[in-house]
Length: 239
Image (cartoon, rainbow, N blue to C red; front, side, top):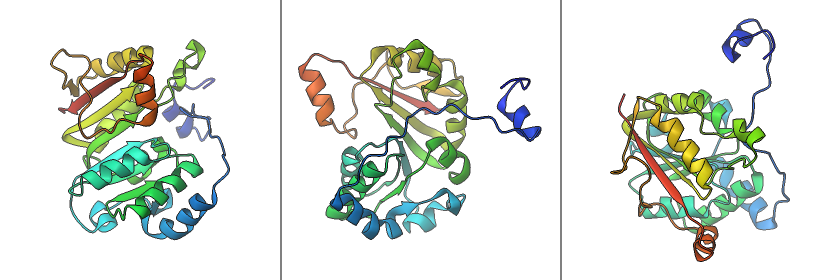
């Protein structure tokens, strides 16, 4: 940041400062099925930041509550959730193109109509495309924990990000996180507990049992067999 105290000060001076990313983009090769799904489904299911602030009623053709998932991977769980909850609308954000293609392929096969996707950075999507007080739930499942201490600054769950996300949730809307890395779970808990604008839905004021709406992934099942834990945190916006 140099001589500037923060990002806003640098931008006011007309200076570009590169921002820390919470992910490393890995350009995997598309399968033929993923490529076909992108070509077929993107016109109806794809969203871009160029569209600007979204009107959810226009995007989905209804006024159902909207759930946004950050980093949906290959999208299997997201498609399963959308299929199981037609009374909700879902928006998924993923930076890896093969994952977007796989998600669209599964959604097309399941004839899902209540799902839209971004292939973009989630921080920019929240800033440019999501209206304040508009989301029913935000989901962040198994984000990169950035194990090494020198990389902890790359973790997505930080006070600044939480505050930006808070504004997008409706009052009473929830932020649901899940991780299989206990030190990251502890970090999430510390960050969220410090926010006076959220309340922990846990009866013990820490973690909650996995809610029924979050599917168990193959990766998670394999980890459980090896004795690995998974920690879910759900916070509700109160102000």
